Image (cartoon, rainbow, N blue to C red; front, side, top):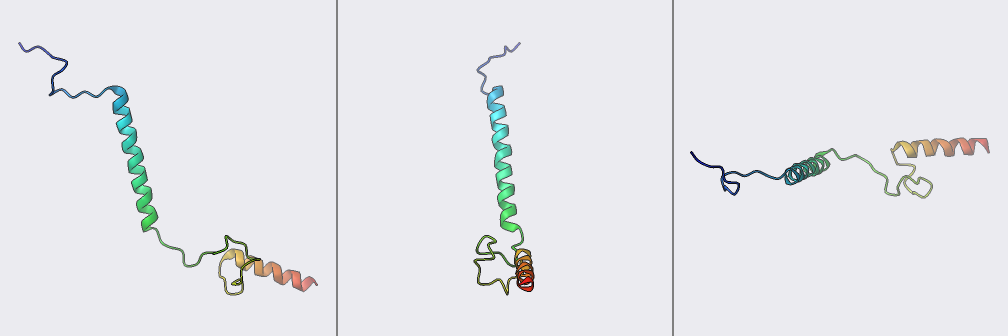
Length: 83
């Protein structure tokens, strides 16, 4: 009968902490890869604001099609109508 040896190279048991660490590293790595892939593949928006949505400082307000610029133009129109 063959006796079990703890140092048998064929038997590869991971300690519990090492096993959990390896699993978590795999999950985190997969999450980073999926997120990076999504950011590379997602559709680019047609138009974006170059001044972080501060329409009062922008010189392109009249031609801008963003919702913030449209509401700013509406606000400015109402302000000039009241005066």
